[in-house]
Length: 291
Image (cartoon, rainbow, N blue to C red; front, side, top):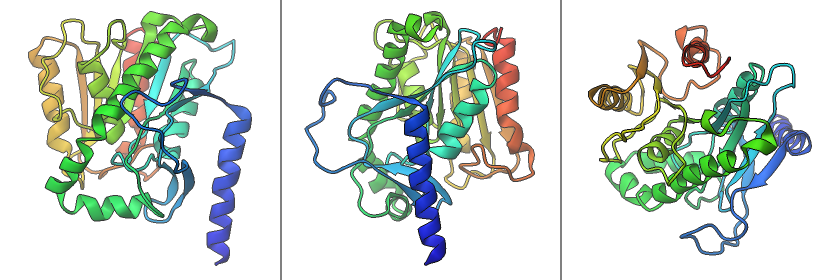
């Protein structure tokens, strides 16, 4: 009981500290497009199943801003989309921790909380139960994914339009997504709105199999990291996405680790996947985004 109370308290303090320290920007002024007004509240809690803080029941998408110091700011921005099967957001390992890492290297980062399916007491357990029937899960999520991707497009558009306010360049705004967030990042890149094409895209153990669109003529450079032993079976999706970019004669870099499973994010396991974000940094440097 004490450990549960302690974890709950830590989650509350974590959210409170983020709210106090970071700017939170509503993505839409009112009810998001294609949504109806919802009465259930957004929820943040510690998931014992995922062993991390998660956010569920997002109905009002928002961006949490992390600003680099004036001495390190390089004019590049990254929108970070946490994963969680469109039922939750792994907000720490695949959100704020990655944001802080990049911010320390001069990148202005925005953690996107995009719309999710409505869940009950524990979204992570509901995801585990739902994903056991993959066909039914995909049918259910097909209603949510377009809304989540639309939030990714809206996030890119917002950051580009307000670039001057954040001291960034509108042509240096990229998007990074993990797992379901990788679907959002890939979808926002393959189906951008006018002027919302990102400058770069990184898909971390994600997928683009939901989108049959041709790779756009102005597709940005693509970075992919995943593990061969991905326990959700998504490793082939990473390879397929890489091949789509290569076939379209666009710049792409793929890191397929032998082990690491699914959801390694910013967790440290003393294996090579611990350093995927260092390779992302190398790639961003090579592409000119950290200069």
